[in-house]
Amino acid sequence: MSGAPVDCWVPDSAALPATGSGPLDGLTVAVKDMIAIEGRVSSFGHPRWRATHAPSTRTAPVVARLLAAGASVAGLAKLDQLAYSLIGNAGEGTAPLNSLYPGRFTGGSSSGPAAAVAAGEADVGLGTDTGGSIRVPAASCGLFGLRPTHGLIGCGGVLPLAPAFDVAGVLARTAGTLGRVLDVLIAPADRATAAAPRVVLAADCLGGISPEASAAACATARAVADAAGGPHSEGRLAAFVNDGVADLFARIQARQVWRAHGPWLTANSAFLAEDVRGRAQRAESLSAAPPDQDRDDDRDWNRYRRGLDEALPPGTIVVLPVMPDLPPLRSAGPEELSAFRGGAFRYTAPAGLTGRPELVIPVHHLASGKRLGIGLLGEVRRDRDLLRVAGQLCPGGRPLAV
Image (cartoon, rainbow, N blue to C red):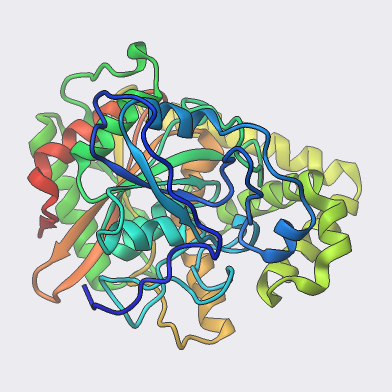
């Protein structure tokens, strides 16, 4: 840790005590400030949103469950504007500090929760993931991060971005802590694990990333197979992990963003960061296009889901990068940030398009000293399989050394 201010909390952050006692006794939670707290106006990453909306009338059930299980809220954490970024730079006030790499961004949009957990200011980060907003901060900050199966955790009281892809997700320094939180948030029937999953490395999808990230993904696949006790193979998945798939995701997401927030975005465009404004303008343009373009994308989306289900037998865990290398420098220019976002989207889109869970584990590449995040993409509703394997690979939260 750098000892510098982490800058992870919104200006009107508030702490909340536990309302009960249970399996989360003593844990503290950093809550992304787009999740409702009774009597407060969520910032949604922008003071203009706060100025144009009324306070919430009830606390989101996902927060209420954590409080009832013994956790307390340490504070309300920053996020990128409207949760519509993967960088960690375009939120309210100073960008949160990445304690692992102080000269680099935290990743977004769950930048504040990630910064708080990485710095030890909270045990758990409660955020959201639409296009990678849990997974990219986890990989950037050396954390475990779970994007759960779509719909597994209710999103009542969570501001929407693109509802077909939105999930509530969790960040922590250990897989064990993630497991404790997940068990509070999901039904008992979803807590079972299967034996000996099949492990597939997305071997033909490693072009365009750093040699260290590629080596880390390969070594992680072998380690996951050893820990899981199942077979290991190299898969041909380039048809499902590529720039075209990433753009399909981005187009569908953009139309949903416009349906959810078009009037507000139109009225408040001048207040947005340049990159967020550009994405909002694209969302408007796509939404105004002929309906057959929307139908074509929906057809391709359905075909994609069916195709990946056919390519991956039940019980498969796919190992793939989360982003091409380390997060961008805080001094990076617009072109570098855009390239980073596009590179990460290539790897985060499959979970969004299929609703599958993905767990990010921290990996220490010994030869370079880099701390990288590698993703484990699982079967729908088999989130617990991923956590079981991660707990074996990384006891006590120690990064997997490769």
